[in-house]
Image: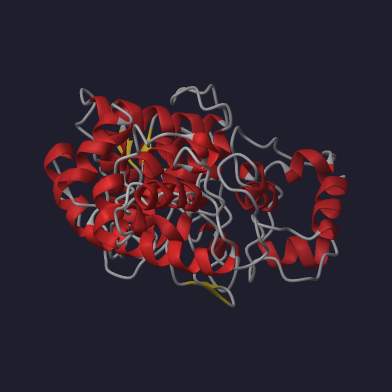
Amino acid sequence: MLPIHPHPFPDELLTSWMVRLAFANGFALHTFYSSLLGYGAPIWSRDSDRHPPSALLGCLATAAGRPVEELSGLTLSCYEGFIFENLVVSGDVPYLLPTGLYHRTRRRAGIQFCPICLKLDPAPYYRRHWRLALSTVCTAHDCFLEQTCPSCGSPVVFHQHGIGRSKLITGSALSICSKCDFRLSDTQPRRTGCADSAASQLLFTISRSVQLGDWDGFFQRVPLSLSFFTGLRILLGLLCGRHGARLRSVLSGTAGLEIVPVAHLDFEYQSQEVRYALLLAISTLLVHWPTRFHEACSLAKLTRSRLTDSFSTMPYWLRTEVDEYLDTRPYLPPAEEVASAASYLQNAGVPVSGPSLGTLLGLKRDVARRAYVEWTTGEKEIPLPVSAHGLGGGLSAPSSFRQEK
């Protein structure tokens, strides 16, 4: 067992703890893991916070005297079944920031940081929820999370301190930019300034729920967090996508800020500022759900067809509103109702046609024509018996027929 093995901090990322473990023992990363622990497989050229090899976890557990289950809990798998369904080995995952990993290079800002957290930490470390696109604010300090070094604009890659010629292994290394040595903890905090907004308070609640890993059904008493976050991701995709321009225009005024996502980029690939604006805009819909959702969709002329690609995964709390209030498809009565109406017309001596069916059933011209065509096709295939009283089944007349929505 190693002489020094620091305890993982609350919500700490596995790789953050791994770097601290090596530095606390006075070693650079490659020397520590390859030579001292004897683990020669790649670590830093892959996303080890996502699916670390079991051999690596076993090696760490032995060296630090900690259970494998505890170390596995430091990975992003803790969000599986909570905010996304499956944490796939590679590819995009809902709400997970992409790293753009290429060999040991991180071409995208795959992790964020709160400068106040880094400054106040007894030993600087990186939180798991900083890897999530859903996290845009620090709920502990009411400030925005930062996605890049404010000095050089580089992504934060804290493990590069222990690799290469510059092998900085001090305890404060994780709070320093690995590219320009700027102290990330000296970044000027940007306050949200929206604490009094109902939408901001809801966004704060959502962020807090993610950061604590706790779900209490605060939204519409939805029992499962996965159901809520799945629906939230669908709404974000709609607002961020090519069909969301009019909805963004409507919500920009309501949320009080401009929403300008980069075209053809998913939510997870947008900047921190855009992701915050999108989340705040969606929160304005959720504050008075579903009334404000209906109003915004009506103003934006948004219909059910814009969400058809999401129907297979759409949760019940969202699907019911989409089906009931956004469905503009014309109502086509069932074949039995059309046949009954046709039988009534025949017994009344009225020729069965599109216009006559439309008048009787209250259908528009195109729908009535379609009902007539389907009725004539059915007549050729299966003749409908007509009772002596007029309508099939003994009814005297269709006293009420369902009108078009």
